[in-house]
Image (cartoon, rainbow, N blue to C red; front, side, top):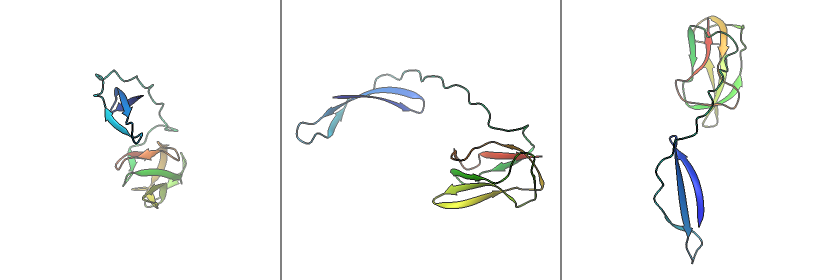
Length: 123
């Protein structure tokens, strides 16, 4: 018998799995215990390097941050790559929606983001 603690959507469950005699594979799982209160995660410090701007640069697809092309304070033109996002083994440039100056970069290389997430802001 093996005991596992599993967290699903913030709910913590204690699960016991019994091994079968013939194959050694798990054959039954007991019903999960009543959900426990999930441990409170410390509030994440904002990753912004400066004051947030009014123009949002958002992810067009879910993926992983591959490269940060621009830096805070850098002037960018409409269409300039600000972030390179990797999705389905493709590198997708996330571009400035209009001319401006990078006010904040809200992600780091390796971060996983959802479609529509704010990656950076411009002024």
